[in-house]
Image (cartoon, rainbow, N blue to C red; front, side, top):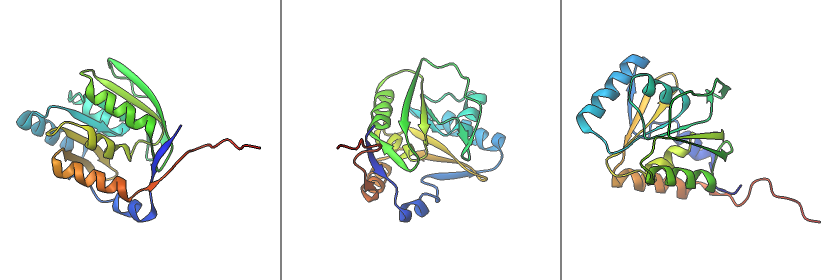
Length: 182
């Protein structure tokens, strides 16, 4: 597994700020606002990143084309998501990194017209950047903001540049789990 990026301490602080519009409130309030947004704007794609937000979208009949989860909530293991999808892909993406495997899976899923579920072994949070980078213009990427609500990122050329800038600011990471040679 080859990691392409790893987060720096400086960026870790920046990532605590919402990357899009924060919708605060309970699950019902945030999902109602999300449903209104989808009905009004009819985005060409909806992508969810995170277990709780993905489950709530499905529970409120807002079905993302792509769901990226790690079967954890606030770093605690949880019961795997059970939703009907056309395709499930498993990838490795260790905490604080973005791997080539995860990038490829997201790009491929967004190119397909299938309801895809990417299950991450590791952590999915940073994959929001990859989803924004490869989603169609006008798409919506949604992720949870712990103890606050949800963040909605409308994919625009400016958001794509911002995602690229974050990636450029991350440390390049060559290989994980290198084998020692004698």
